[in-house]
Amino acid sequence: MTDRCCRCFTVRATALFVLFPALAGMVASPALTQESSPEETGLAIAREANARNDGFGNLTASMTMVLRNRQGQESRRQMRFKVLEVEGDGDKSLFVFDQPRDVQGTALLTHSHLTAQDDQWLYLPALKRVKRISSSTRSGSFMGSEFSYEDMSNPEVEKYTYRYLRNERCGELVCSVNEQVPVDRKSSYSRQLVWQDTDQLRTWMVHYYDRKDSHLKTLTFAGYRQYLDRYWRAGEMTMENHLTGKSTVLSWTDYEFGADLGASDFSQTALRRVR
Image 1 (spheres, rainbow, N blue to C red):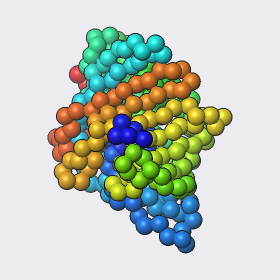
Image 2: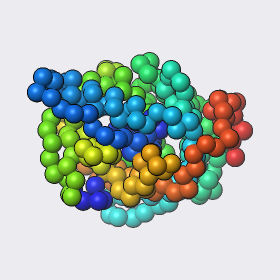
Image 3: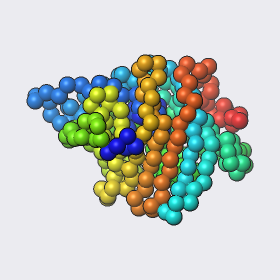
């Protein structure tokens, strides 16, 4: 694995995780002891990563989404992203499409929760209506991309069980490989394998397995930068679908921490007013 191998769609530990930028906010792997079981070690790593990312408050960012089909043909979309840290519960996030014109104003609002199923709403400007994403449709494609609606939720620590598998080289780094299994039986994934460097605990790669335990998708991260001398964020995330041969690349820019955001910016009412 090379440099091309991030609490947000880094999305805290893994997955849109990402969504997202929370995946990048991981630092300092806890020490492994002979007395720790693989399950205890995996959970300790997840908790440490989560704790080290706490306190960012909120952030905004810009994003380019590139959709590629099996033949390599591309289409591009411009988006804005906002996330609000919520004490005692999961984060709130908002994605807004600005271009092209046929998707302009479309927005996805997510209220993540620590243990309960997340709440998600999609605003469709052409119909001037807010559509709730049901549990049965969370596995569906988010706006034609290889990211599902489930991928766009924040992966809270409490929503998985963990098992440390091994350490291995990943380019010039050493990565821990951990298995995480969704607690929610309605998840479209049976499990995920996560590669995180043991120095900063940045996530470099995630393998997603479907309910038949086939390797369905791979998410890779690149272009990490550190903000406020603490929070790591990836500049690029690539989701490859091994079943369809399609891929989606998210390129992140203009990260801003401490924006003027509050809970009212992440309500269904605000969703209807988004521009």
